[in-house]
Image (cartoon, rainbow, N blue to C red; front, top):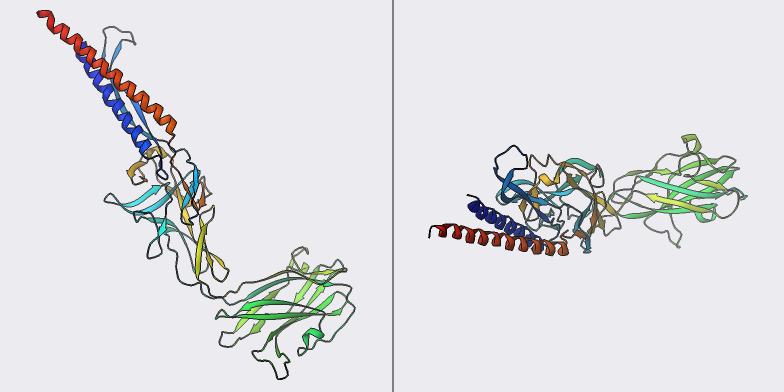
Length: 430
């Protein structure tokens, strides 16, 4: 009976070491597969029988078998590709994709970030599964529902200016008190600043803001726009669209600002009201650093000049930030948020089921996916223009291959030896 057991022990060793060579061979075959996670064969002993006696050590095994294959989810190195739709995860987490894989429809998870746009503007894998994330609404806010990421190829619509922020520096030692003349603003003002605004059609227009000192620590401002045509003789014609006053304290900080929103209607465009803000004054709770100032001496200056309008523009490219935000670059110089890539995190990565195609599926052992923004909640950061390479260690795999081969040879020798002993036993009758 023990000789027969020797034969089966050898067979089990052949089977388990053969399986180990399969796992190792698969690792080596996928050394250049993006996002591939190496497998590891786990063996366990087969208990055969117990020798008579109460000694706990009187057990004889029946050989070995492969208990399973573990995935090594350690981080792979990054390969820079320069393609904006190639993404890599640094740290914990998987890209979530939806579609059909192997006849099964549902959600799958992958570390392979080779994505591309399909003909409808969806980000997809090479197999057509759609990348999941958050869309951006018409108000520019990122939504909170996970779904297919679609990047619109339509032009960015124009946006009329409704806010101007201006921070200026005015001279406290100015002594010239001028009477402002809107027909000759350049020669009847102490200082001016020009800002480009946009109407509802996306057309650009210049708004000139002129400043006049009216008393110590007090200034007035007047906003003008040029008419479409110039009067005969080359004299420019201006239209006043708003005015107000600024006062400063003895430290040169903005104390108060008054004035209604600028009201203007450009040819062919809708009427618009534009708020002109010179910074948070002391009366509004400000302390001075982020507001217009009155210098003790020196030149006039403009520290900040911003407005929120834009012309229309065509999408020229995208980039992805560490938190998964997809930002579109447009021909009008604007960079606009278009979506956000989501990442999924699991309680146990080892519980995921490998379904092929660089894809995993959630199981009861992995736990439910916790999906959210990248670089948050324990999820890793996303690197655009890069791919995570396979984490296969070739040197270690070759050592595993050698040891599996030696184990196979040794178990084959066990079988031949047991066979010879069995033959000798049979020949005893002769």
